[in-house]
Structures are given as C-alpha cells and as structure tokens.
Image (cartoon, rainbow, N blue to C red; front, top):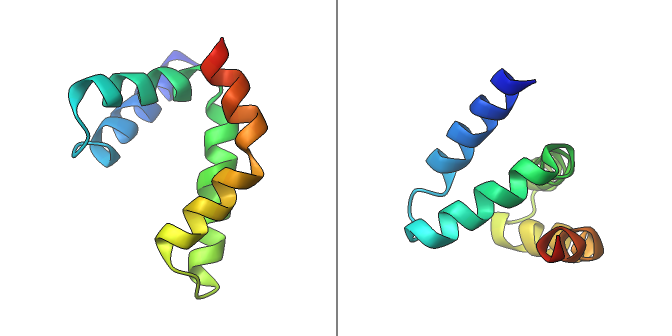
Length: 76
C-alpha cells in the first residue's frame, strides 16, 4: 500500500504543479486521507470528458456530487 500511496502523491504533485506550494500540500494531504474517493472522482470526470463535456464543467459537476464527502475530509 505504501508504494501505491507514493505513486498517487507523485501523480498529484505533477497534476497540481501550477498551484502554490501550500495548496498543493493541502490537496495531497486530502488525497492521502481517501485515495479511493479521488480515484472515483477522477474516473467520473474522465468519463464525462469522453462523453463530450468540457473538463471544467465535468469537474465542477462531479465535485458538487461529492461535496459532502469532500467537506468531511477537510474537517478531519
């Protein structure tokens, strides 16, 4: 499991490279708390993009769907 966490964190750092360091660390910490949730979110965004939806719209809609889970992660 440690190797999977390492790979996930490296991928997150790469995808979030344009964010300021503090926000990048906050996001990687959230991802580490529940990697399965973020995997599910990413897969759903990709599915919507392949269906013709724009990336930003797809991301916003999926984040709305999972806002309760994301809010609880942020409060932990």
